[in-house]
Length: 255
Image (cartoon, rainbow, N blue to C red; front, side, top):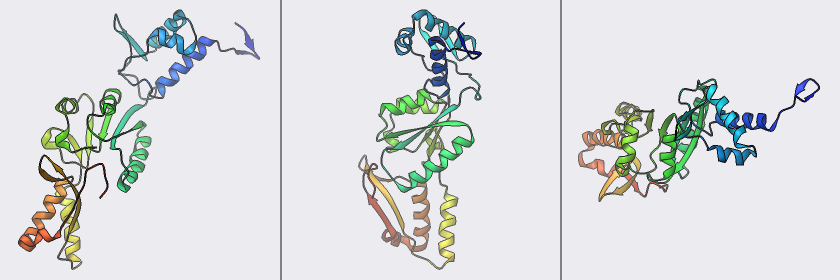
């Protein structure tokens, strides 16, 4: 083997192996997904099919890949985290909002501390193929709904419910639909109202965004809204309606 100053010269095969392994460790070939064919790898790295086969064999021996006869080669599901970061995909609406910017900063920091590789998927509707791709290619999913929850296709909802991987909705109370979620509670809304009452305020308005969905006006944050409404009805009777400052517009637009 030719050496330079005592160091082994990297061959084209060595460089291809190192790059393929690097791409796996970067998360570009997620756990459980099908690996590119030998022909594709041969073309990408300008190496022979035999060399590719040896590289694949080595990665199989090292438990990065596994073969399924007459189907293909796949990335192992059980690669340890110290070898391959777990991937967390965040589904978000594809339009700007100040609260989204704050959330991105916090979730990025949390993901880094937990050694998760965070990917962002910006979408305008549930039928965006990128959402299904994210579910298939990630170890876990966080979802800020890009569209009204009732519009979620049942085929996608079934995948979210099957618990093969964690799927958590952010800011939407959807446990009654069989999904896991993290959102504001009645308690937090009541605390805010109590604090305003203690400060001497009586007419406490609700400013929110709603949309027309199936001929019915629906608030995006139903838990917040219904809690506020019941408190104001108890205090003001039908006068609560004067305090309902809803702004009607599609979800993909800001009020």
